[in-house]
Length: 172
Length: 457
Image 1 (cartoon, one colour):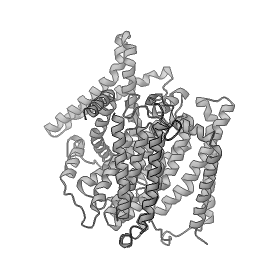
Image 2 (cartoon, helix red, strand yellow):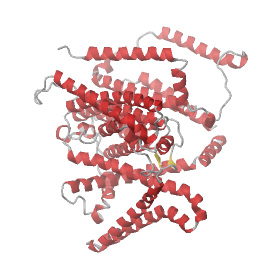
Image 3 (cartoon, chains in turn cyan, blue):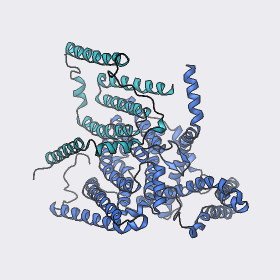
Image 4 (cartoon, one colour):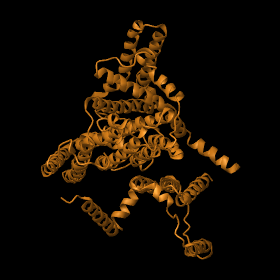
């Protein structure tokens, strides 16, 4: 029961602040609401017992990316940004795409109970203290079954990093 | 609605101990921070051969309370051009992050708010890093140049030093093999050595990086008062300012606790498994008794009667703490049947003492540095971080990992692992110094006055 209350609490915060992120005129306010949305998502992870995912969400998204994001905002001229057009005028396309997405999600939820093996997989609940320590589990699966994708992602990040250094370096 | 109430009561019934701990932390921490500030002023006075605060209470012991009252009744000013919402939010964010990080820490085996969380140290580091938002948003919302520059400096500093600190933590975690705080301390007990001794270079890197992360001198560039007034807090006054202050000192306690847990053996006493050194257990109560007796001797020298009474009360408190510390040891001596029942009490109370003692020593080191070293220039700070500490910490992690594999090959455990890790640390230090020397040779030495303008400085 309490789990549900906590879930809906965080979910409501996430949805409301996600909407505010898009609709606020002031870029810094948008950033603040984006942080709130990401934090609320982290809260949902924690409520589900995925502690590792929770802290990774906070360190990577909220900590790392948002610090850089705030940097960019600092260097953007806010007065100019406020006067610019906020939304692109593509209402009908947007409406169509979101309807299609909503229909897909709805179909999935609807088919969950009806057809076996279809829709959202329903797992039996596990008491929280019986869960395996999840940082170890993540490490194991990363370094055994998903070693190749992991290495590819690392190389990609390395390339991006070296590229950033090369581009930022002063030409002497 | 009824179900919710029932579930909440159930939850409270199951988790009353962490909840009480949480309330205590939030309620008592401002007081502790106040006294840390007093201790800092006293140490500063001592190092500069003066007396420090002496007026409020005997030897200024009530000064923190006077300061708190002053801050609370000060006028609260919000600048006209400030962004009201963000201006209100920023200090709260800073304090919230710092206090939340306290939840992951364990003071002794029994006192931990978030008990047995698997991510332990990662939680503390990640959540306390969120305090940077308070600083950046506060600096931006004040709509003042000093504040904005202070905030930008602060975030640049935090981002650069967090990498080094994280790598240093990884080094300690390699030995521990777990992120859980209780297990980390247990691992140091099992291996019979503090990880700070196994990886001295990692400890050094964490020490320097933690000073930079908490914006303390000699790295307090964000609030360099000679150039930036007070940095990001320039426009904040009264209670909002004190919230920033609270966050800063809480962060100091947090980094000191992380270092204590990972590198200095947490709540273990020195040499926890050497039985002929068991007399060390008697030192904490003895220390408190000595302080109490000293206070008693000082009582007649206090000028005012109220101050005499207060000094007496302080002495009484010291004796009370001594009794609490001694009771779990003396009880079994008098009545051997109590020995097993007293053991958890003994571990809890003495663990708490040693933890607070080590945290205190770490913070004292911070203060000592602050009153000894002059402030760095911003480009020097960045050079130290990027050209020395980050390469050093990365090479150190690599070499310590190799040293551990070599150690496993020769079946080295515990203190004998020093045979491989110490050479690894020394080699890492030498490579990093070599890199620094090569870098400096390549760049022609710039005159301080002719330094290229830095966008953050």
